[in-house]
Amino acid sequence: MSVPRLVVAAPSSGSGKTTVATGLMAAFAARGLAVSPHKVGPDYIDPGYHALATGRTGRNLDAYLCGPELVAPLFLHGARGCDLAVVEGVMGLYDGAAGEGELASTAHVAKLLGAPVVLVVDASSQSRSVAALVHGFASWDPEVRIGGVILNKVGSDRHEALLREALDASGVPVLGVLRRAPQVDTPSRHLGLVPVAERRSAAVGAVAAMAAQVARGCDLDALEALARGAGAVPGGAAPWTPGSPVDRPTRPAGERAPVVAVAGGPAFSFSYAEHTELLAAAGAEVVTFDPLHDERLPEGTAGLVVGGGFPEVYAGELSANEPLRGEIAELARGGAPVAAECAGLLYLCRELDGRPMCGVLDATARMTERLTLGYRDAVAVGDSVLAAAGTRMRGHEFHRTLVEPGAGAAPAWGLPAPARRVEGFVQQGVHASYLHTHWASEPGVARRFVERCRTS
Image 1 (spheres, rainbow, N blue to C red):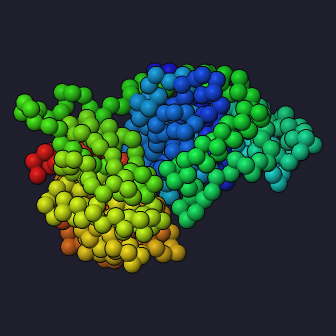
Image 2: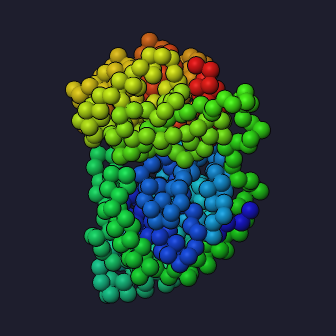
Image 3: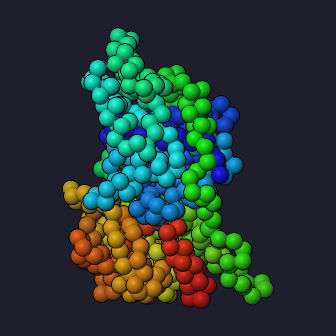
């Protein structure tokens, strides 16, 4: 299959990838194109801005969590019916999973997609040296095609002229020049950008500013032509599918699909779109609710999924919603399936930063100064509503909190070397863990969860 596509990368974090990628998405969408937005790596926040820019769901492409073999199928799934796709990279172009070579790097994903790369360079403190930098990145891996460069944070017309002159002999065309523009900045805090769900009106303005800056400073015609020259996705990949109707368990006539309540809203904004698609494909009726405001679980809730987010920011409001906390505790005591990741784990604890939470787990949680970050290989220690004992999955940790104890009598996961520890909690129908996982890598997780909802 052939989908016009670009990968937006940079030599390092902080170069302006998100501004350029999001601005490109919005600028192309403003031209009337259906734009498919993607993000390399596990990050949940950037896809929220991408969705604002395009009006389509932002999707992740993570070769570590899902395996390299799923990158192209997941890309094609997200890009169905689109005119063009823009993929925002992660970290520096060649930075991948620690100790794993190129695995999960932007360069790796670009090669898996056969996509040209647009390199965003922070030119604020250089002139002629930019040519050496671009040459090095363009020649490092001959399988990675640098199709052009966008110069960011350029100070003046004179500065731009020096940069263009230096790059003339590099063979890499300049496809855009962006001046310093503080108005497109987005606020950050302890885990990165503030999510769209917490600042929607301000985020809309930020995305509009990004689009205006990119449209003003970039050659959109040349960038679109570069994307259209990408050719077919390598390997004859077919689009991923969450399942077909024949995969769904049959239900007796008149029996309602089990309702799976999925936490959303500002406190729980981290989720991969494929999770709800897999749940629906497995036969569930997926209903989203907001623990900050909804005092009741959705009617008929048979199972609960609480993903990631920032409950520590909203601990007061979450704690104040006593009716909902009580319903969740009662649901868990009754043995209903409950899957909680990271923020969900904190919410199920007895307390968070001294404030009462759901009390499903006999554990306390608190904010710390220490950042826990990285990919993890995980093995299910015992049977749970998500996985049979011995099931292997890959996950990602990203938090500044501490749960004590870190594991229950029946842990959720065993983490082999170098971590060599167990973590998380399995009790009755509850599976709670710090690990973010991508269920597309193991579709049986969703099927198992929905079947437990049906029979519990």
